[in-house]
Amino acid sequence: MDTGATSHMTPSLSQLTDSQNYNGTDRVFVGNGTSLNITHVGSLSLSHTVPLSDVLVVPNLTKNLVSVSKLTHDNHAKAIFVDDSFVIQNRKTGRVLARERCDQGLYVMNQGPQALLTTSSSLPRASFELWHSRLGHVNFDVINKLNQQGYLNVSSILPKPICCTTCEMAKSKRLVFYDNNKRASAVLDLIHCDLWGPSPVASLAGYSYFVIFVDDFSRFTWFYPLRHK
Image 1 (cartoon, rainbow, N blue to C red):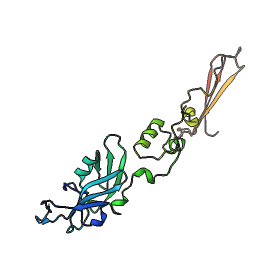
Image 2: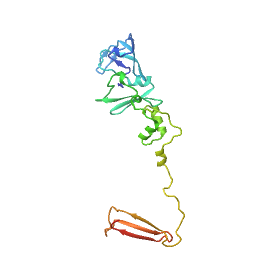
Image 3: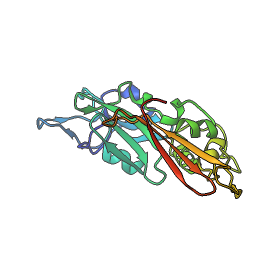
Image 4: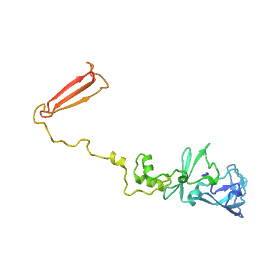
């Protein structure tokens, strides 16, 4: 990938799917100031979604050069470069058309021009429900969008109605205990008890637990510290 090249170039005529002799007078100027001869012009494809047109054959080049400006212009795409890789995406849909890595400071296509395939073709296929579980029960609309952009390979359509038992249970607001309006009619008829502990720090007297008793009728409360259960 070359951000300084105005055209795609290759030293090998055999890489073009179709070609014709170049009859123009233009030459390719390289970094040291010398100019190189152009012998043919043609086209090739990085994949079935990324065609390259007007590719120049320059025999004295040592590397294939893909012009970033021409690639993004001709394919209505955008290129995103980070420290260890680059991604080419459709500007309108955001679909990933190509993804490759940076090698010793150069953004390269390691296996030649035919090796740059759409990312989704190499992803394992799985259903909406399985992707939903793998991604931590993310919203189904997010999975649908990732599938459209080529980040996921979904094998089934979006289920209608959308149902996930785990999500329903996690969002449930029902109380664990039902309301109880029954009350004791006399003192000591019903006693509630709760034990707490162990405390991370024992008291000065060595207590690590406490127990509480509450009389249901009078609401009188007893509190007892404990060293052991």
